[in-house]
Length: 208
Image (cartoon, rainbow, N blue to C red; front, side, top):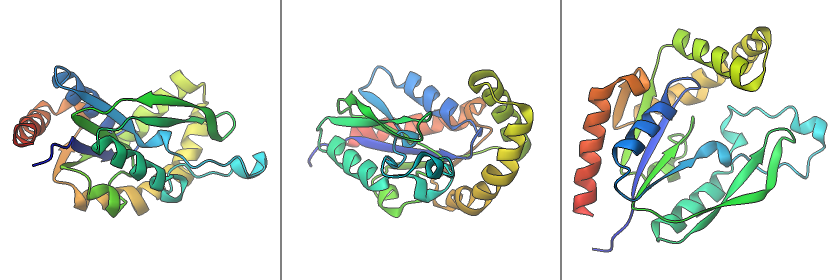
């Protein structure tokens, strides 16, 4: 049987702890050949649009992502071919001219809010994970992150959460939970669930 990398999808709402889960799995398996591919590097190029139009971008909607390119790149990595991962420039609300060279590995963690939304992506995954965290914890984490790391005001974060993040989560992200093989409550703090995922992944790697 032809050897192929193992692919783990890690989805969940903003502030759910999916990045913590991803980092924990990565650190646990770092003796293996492993890489992380983040969906939010694959927002669509908007250079053809006026800047005023780009400002209206809803980054929590499935249409914001260039899944065609993501699937193409994932396919290359599955064939053990390197890729040039795009970089998104949030100050210009479009794709940067820079790219990041990524070498193929034996394990690919695909992480993002909507990685389970596209059936084509799901079909490439060996394990599908949904990180399920209560809304109150997610908004608190988002508040702290956006204020401390992005210089946002409390009111602007609350307005964005109420008007965009929450409705998009309920409409598009939360429903993808039904596609998950494993649902991890409370993100990176759930060591039992993560240990089970790592054990399963090690079994998949041995089979491959």
